[in-house]
Length: 138
Image (cartoon, rainbow, N blue to C red; front, side, top):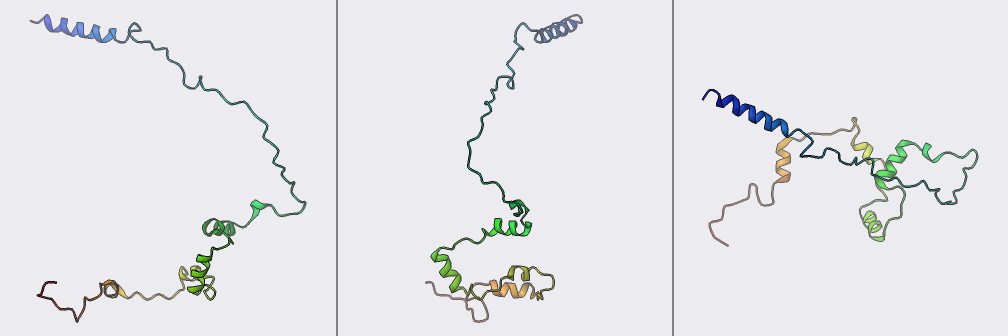
């Protein structure tokens, strides 16, 4: 019995080591980076680009604030008829241009009315002092 355990462990070790040999598995596999082909270099077509005017401002030198506003709000684009009517009806011609700056300004006076006022404003219509429980079904 004492000899069986070392012999079994020895056979298991030999079986495990034989799996590491080259006999069962081919370790030579293709390199995925070596088989990729690169496209040949091509001269791009002439897009008839106009050369820059001497002394003219470079387009990429525009102020970052202007670029940001154009990216966010689309710049001075034409509005559709429906959008123009909505803006006119909402009083867009009399609106303050810098309202977004005024709202976020730390010097703007803001009064915190508290959670009670928020709950009253957000309460559904009919809840309040005059609300009554009805015993009749509808």
